[in-house]
Image 1: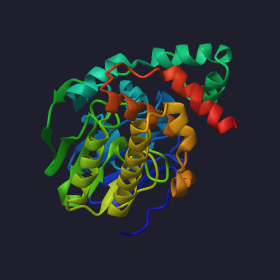
Image 2: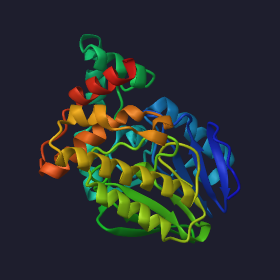
Image 3: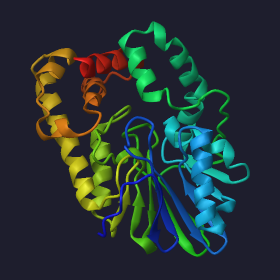
Length: 315
């Protein structure tokens, strides 16, 4: 694959398919996609707030007139950085998996506003939140809900171009999907792929995430746009799969040995993965796996997890 520069802005992948990249891919800095054919356009995800999303849409419209009015927005999963800017897609259809649509309504921007307002009183967790999310403008956001949902798979057309929406969650979140454009041998993977950054599992099971990687490895694909990080190919998928399998095995050993989550966290040596960005997400991944192993279906304690992550990076 020809190397695509990891620089902010719109990158032409060829054949009416574009990737909009936002380095450095850390918390809230995600990638999106654009598919155009004839006079129709499909947007894959938005950015975390309206200001960033408008900048992106302006650049897309300047590059291809079909993008001046987006016909369809596909939301790959229910994290706010991938749909909070959706109010700017005023007339287009918004497509998500059924589980993603439910998550979108459960995580409105008001939760981020409240979290950041409380941050000065939350100690390390608040400092961490302000550092990671203080750059975004959440107040007043009114993201649109999904107008069309599906389970399993949904095939769409953009002009004459086929676009396959394939549900692979629950994995990273409850309702993950990948977007495949067969004609272009291109996948937009959402947060099933973090390239150069540490994957974070809010839902699981991890076996579903590994299956999603295997699915992509079996597909006829040359270019893969991750939810965060530079454009990659199957080598990037292999790397993420390797991390997931490594973490699963290491956490399982410590769970079976009767260690607490904190003991497991202190005991695991990340090896080569320590160089990946946002390695502190190991806290969340251990928590999710302990819940998986114990069949605990309660929601994660986000404040406690952010406190642990903050304490790790402050050491």
